[in-house]
Image (cartoon, rainbow, N blue to C red):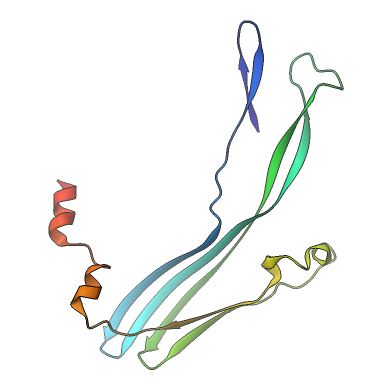
Length: 148
């Protein structure tokens, strides 16, 4: 969409800008149940701007048929997978995102990346190195200092 800005001698159209995050986003919550088992809750989301289409809009003031403006409309594709599982240290979890069924409208897009299958493998392993763990766990003193 656009916003109309009106001045004394002229007017202008300011586009309304939207920001889309592209790529993969992984949200993982792991809970250690015992020394050999971890409960996982995950949401994996993939988003992409697949195309940008153009739309022609009439000029809002004193519009004649020739006075039109063109705006860009992005086509955003997003899909998510939610998984919950309990894994022992020796086990692995495969998450499979299947290829969608093809429809007549999809046949034109058969070469795009969104029609590929995806497989993710998740393994759990306890990290016994305390220095490596410090990168994942905030220091309690720093958190208390930020809150005050």
